[in-house]
Image (cartoon, rainbow, N blue to C red; front, side, top):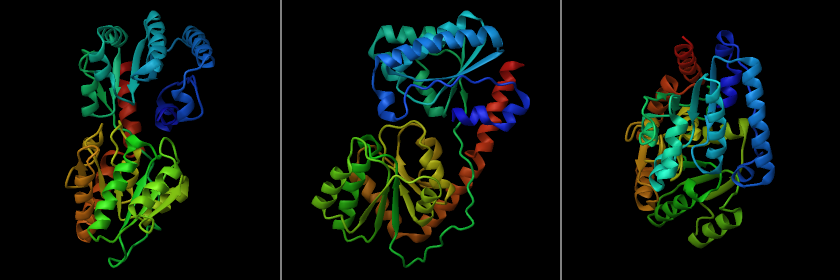
Length: 344
């Protein structure tokens, strides 16, 4: 999303943008690990930011902040440095966890309040704005993420007689709900449902071996294909071939996979987590269930497996909702309006 802001032709046409690329790792695992190399990097970026502010003299500083953990304290030091130059600051929160952290410790709560004082904040949704209400007195901007519109001209039209195909697309992480999905599929299998499931993603704290052993123990080998990570056109082919998208995550802020599924006309079955209830309209563009509830998840999947017309209707409404709210064009225009407002 940061790249989209920097590379936006709309924003470049109106604003003179200078970007500082802060990189602390090449993978999720690297980003989550502490190292002295990162401390050195963080300190060097501090001087780089100060030097650029002095030489460039920006009217507005836009900065993406990690909401919790060591990364927050690193980012807080950058924001406090920026405040010394008395420049307008706009921070963009792409994650969550501030409300929980601020209630865990009075010290943390005070630090959040100091960092967020007299700056403007962008949240991804109304629901996520609740995450900062304990530490921020202002009214945040709301800007949903957006994705590029793909060409659907070669969308696969599947016959109604075909065994329905379920798609899961995310890394194989426990809190993304992949094991909860296997429990739900086992319930459906035992009830006699016919379906095919494709799991797309890279192994993480759920390894391929764990998946295979779980599938074997539950007798799901003939129902599930583990496709591994797919990118670009191969990923889009997986969306085109599916009948419904299931993503039972229980730790997310604004999963872009839900937008991708809606773009390809798939009904989305997901959870009441993060921004998802703002993205997926329950019982209209998909279905939402409580987190870590495999029985309810199985019930909702079964409902859509039985009803072809309901799947198609929800999928069509989901695509319309995507086109009306969550394209890259919408994201760019929202960001443009905020920059314009603050600079005026």
